[in-house]
Image (cartoon, rainbow, N blue to C red; front, side, top):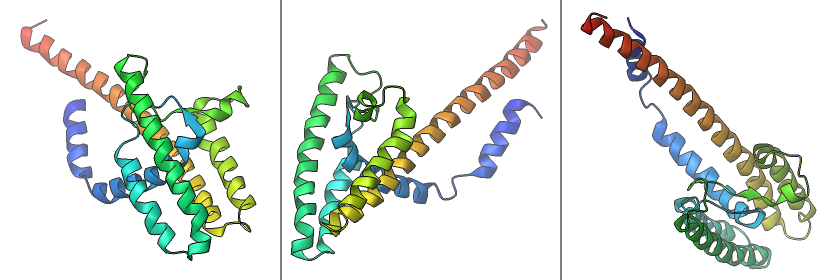
Length: 197
């Protein structure tokens, strides 16, 4: 069995079991993460803030309903700040993309903490530094505003998971490119065999 045939049969066997469930969970995690990212990052890709921000705009009011009006007030303020920041960053990202200044249209933004910690890589800042700082902010606010504090703690986990998912996806893409090279080499050998070379 050739490389191409093995890869194809393995893909069919693996199927898409749980893909919809995973995609839904991923959208939920990214929606909560983007509600924080708009405050702690800049220079987003033109297509990054989209469906996930819309879902966050629906989820946050639902979360506010679970708290008493006094406890929910800081969360309501956060919600309106989020809406303003998300719209502004989405427009700015779109304009950057239209001018050709965007590296990747789905770029999740440059972390602001890189100005304070310039030796950190973009990936490490997103995966470790930002979630830790957001979690600390949540713990500091715990006695002042429990609704916002709990949201920040959950959002810190979502920031970490979102960065981890992006890294995993990039690694998968690299392996897929490697597989494509192997498959093309196998097909080229078969082609040369057909031509009698």
